[in-house]
Length: 354
Image (cartoon, rainbow, N blue to C red):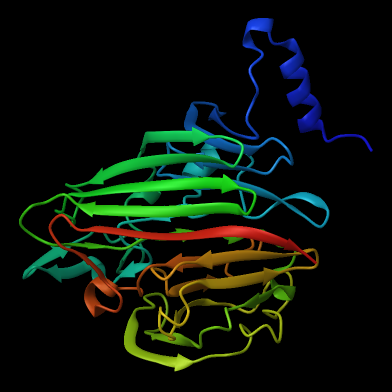
């Protein structure tokens, strides 16, 4: 059997090295990469498994975005999430896919919230609301740490919030991507570095799972927990109204999303796991197409999902959220970082061939 091209190139590179440089190369590696298109340039880190070619591209120069993830499925390496084929211009224009949603994800009603007795006003960038935080705009993150050996490749990115419009809080944020034999883990860490007041915080990600036909895709919520639909105001605002409704189909695995390939059944809906964190400390959502089962797991810091099918050419968005939409106002799972307090939470991606 002919070895994959990436293995051939890797072995060739090893043979061409001078004798003094013949040091054993680890199975997992981290490489620098520049995504370029005309005048647009974005710095990136590539996490690579040299044995099977699995890799992830993380944009340190554009808000920590997860631009690409390829894992081995039934027919070999495949895209797990939608990507822009390394086109820096497209990445800058199309901000949502793979974006890190921080320090808030989804919507803040009217771009307005009250914290510590004071009302704050965020930039309204989605109808009447603020949406998806500040990193989605492409703020560069510092590369704080890199590690790789035969068990994993990891990169930690850092950014300090403070001074953004409507967010007068100093919060240090770290995001660590780790690729290993089980897939990709994403770990967020936030610390309130102020000495005298609390700060609101939230974390999410906006991956589009790359499937051939959204309408035929089966999305199954983790059956450890029951799930409720978050009731909202009519579009375009979609702000939670304080109630939730039990939901099963189609997210119990009994049926596909429905519709057709160009117009799948429309969802832009939030869902909440209602079982206790102790009973269900880890929740795994399965996204099944005709080849593989793509998996999104969340630890007990993430109890919310947003499902979006309005861009079928990109796939189906299944977004992990650490709190409910508009939680800075409705306080449902809001993260209130006290002075000096640290919050951590993780989610990740894996694949299972059918």
